[in-house]
Length: 124
Image (cartoon, rainbow, N blue to C red; front, side):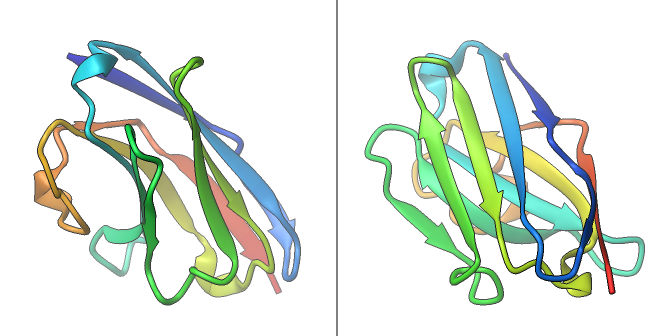
């Protein structure tokens, strides 16, 4: 089992920045990919960005790739999401996810473990 705990959400104005953190614990040696997803009441959970836990390679959705950066600290079992140039459309609950499968990609169902989520609200 892997446990994930997110932190760092909050209220920010348009154009501002936030950094989300995700602490992983448990059988972290099984992790292949870590990712961030987000969800609003009106939409299904959507992919934001991912990082290969071992190589550090990343992939991001087009809507965020010039504004958000995912990073990891393997020694601390931490994943971070640095968000900048935030816009109201980024308002959502952000979830950290972990997969023990190869090439999980952007598919929600491929991720085995999820955090409880942290709210990010961007005011206009």
